[in-house]
Amino acid sequence: MKQIKRNCWYSVVFLTTVIGANACRVPHYTGMEMKPIDHFRNQDEHEADSSIAKISYRDFFKDEMLVELLDSALKKNNDLKVALKQIEFASEGYKQSKWLNVPLVNANLANVGINRPSGNSMNGMMASQFMGQKYTMDYTSSIQISWEADIWGKLNGQKQESLVDLLKTQEAVRAIKTRLVAEVVQGYYNLLLLDRQLEISQRNLAFADSTLFILNKQVELGLANILSVQQQEVTRDQIAKRIPALEAGIQVQENALSILVGEVPGPVKRTMRLDQVESSANLSLGVPANLLSYRPDLRSSELDIRRSLATIHVARASMYPNLNITAQGGLNAFKANNWFNLPGSLFAAATGTIVQPILNGRQLKTRLEQSKIAKDQMELNFKQTMLKAVGEVSDALIQIDKLGEQLETSNLQVERSDKLVQNAMLLYKFNEATYLEVIVAQTNRLQAELDQATVKAQKINAITSLYRALGGGWL
Image (cartoon, rainbow, N blue to C red; front, side, top):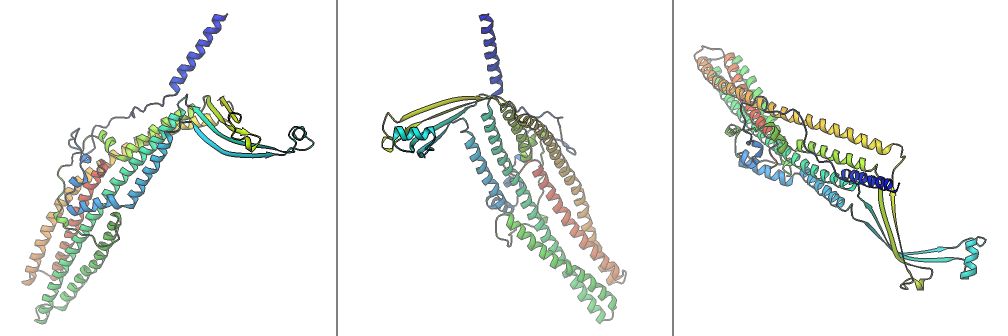
């Protein structure tokens, strides 16, 4: 019989040890299982170890003035500074989580109490009889120590949650950097686009003014009628009307760009024109799996899954017994003059408690089940984020490809429209063409040049979008 009891006891101890050993470990995240994506849509070829995301913005963008603006933005932008402060905030939380296993120690430096029981009570009569007074005094100085044994790894799970929170703030900063780089680049190239549109409009306005001067002279000489002058005046006014709007757009864009780089709104220096900007020929993409290494939103989404695993572990460990040890010691006396009389005033006490939740309105069970559901949500969010990331890269690729085709057509259209204006003016001088044909030719050339500048800027912005979609800009 004793042998059976002994074997049962050994079994209980063994099972408790096994359960405790398994429960105290926070589950290790091994990565998401999802359908592999071998390449991006519209990708002709790829190199497994090559991606423009690994290139610093200082090397990817060739305009020195643009690089200076990016450097300033990453140093002075206030949104980025707020995110950096959030890293400091989360870092303090992680430092505190490292102390969860350390006992709590509180010092009661001085505690003086007075108790006057009822004169008709037993305590009151005994106090009057033995102490000769109707009240008692109590003088105490003590140190209290409390410690929770992390048998099931609950505190370790909380520390893992704090670590993931810190890592997520770092990824948030990287995400802000990639967005900031893209916004500065797109704002800068939009400024060059507006400069180009203003230059085209002013050149066409000068051409319209010279044409109007010639027509007026022809009217004075009787070689043309007043109708042609009036038509040219309308064309000239239409061109002139665009210039103030473009000048306003330039100043508004300069103000927005100044704010991004952390400066007071004002003029922005540029040393390059839009037609001088060369698109990068090396647009290596790598494979979609590389996105997880460079895109901060994907890394943050993966961290959410890691945190959900730690949260599940904490919720499960909260359902197991808690071992709490408390101790107290110090000095205690009924009289002030004996307060620090050693060793007579010394006292000490210690307790150990094991608390097992039994009935708590299903709160712990609900918390565990909700944690599991939250983990499923995080996994789905990760898959969706990955699909969106691949889609953004594919969208940028098709934009670059088709805008390149549009730009070739636009360049040809500008050449043809310029020849058309020259031929129309020549034929008009010899009365072989009407002035309406001259005006149409001028209008077509103006629109062709403006379209060319717009398509050029759109292609540059598409390349910038590809750079950001691949996770570039924060290295």
